[in-house]
Image (cartoon, rainbow, N blue to C red; front, side):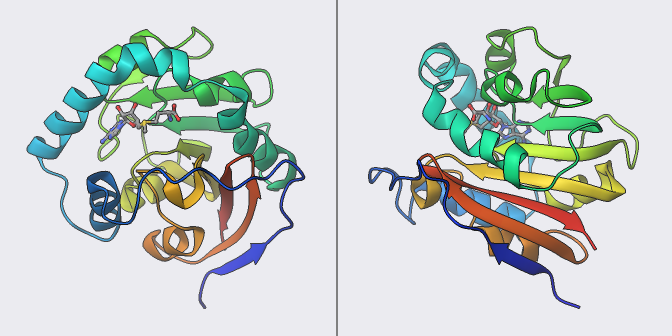
Length: 212
Ligand SMILES: C[S@@+](CC[C@H](N)C(=O)[O-])C[C@H]1O[C@@H](n2cnc3c(N)ncnc32)[C@H](O)[C@@H]1O
């Protein structure tokens, strides 16, 4: 059986993002190729660490605003994912997601590869520096995994989720997000079959998906 995707109505605040990153953006190309099977090499890991360590200072000021939080909050409100379980955020950066999840989910661990990003995140949850292609947690450790503008490592996400676990995928600038995959492609890349829902909110969109 194929994965199923339900399109929900836009949130009332949904707006078109300004043009930012087109289909040829290098991060876009990388996101797609890694999600669909290209191996993640040490050189890839070094490159993203370097990029985000150098962006961390400005990121901590300019990427935690309400527009960014809007699709995350709407996913929690309307995405049908149980909030009371064990949550993991992958590519948590300087804490945009943790600020929304804090106090709303059962438990939360934040992970990122870039030490400088993690260092600037608020102390709202344990922060673990690790590569998302191979995270230091046992199989089935989490009920929900959040990724905001983050690369998708489908097999690792599938491994870490409990059998009925959920993925929350957010692109805060919609298809203008540099690290972008549309909802249908996320479902296709993930191992197994999934039931998903998606909607636009703020300048972005969210996808929630639960393994069938
Ligand atoms: C575009 S930023 C988004 C950060 C944060 N989620 C936000 O929305 O502000 C992507 C983040 O993913 C992290 N990242 C990229 N590749 C990663 C990997 N292989 N493992 C862990 N983190 C990674 C980067 O260090 C960076 O913090």
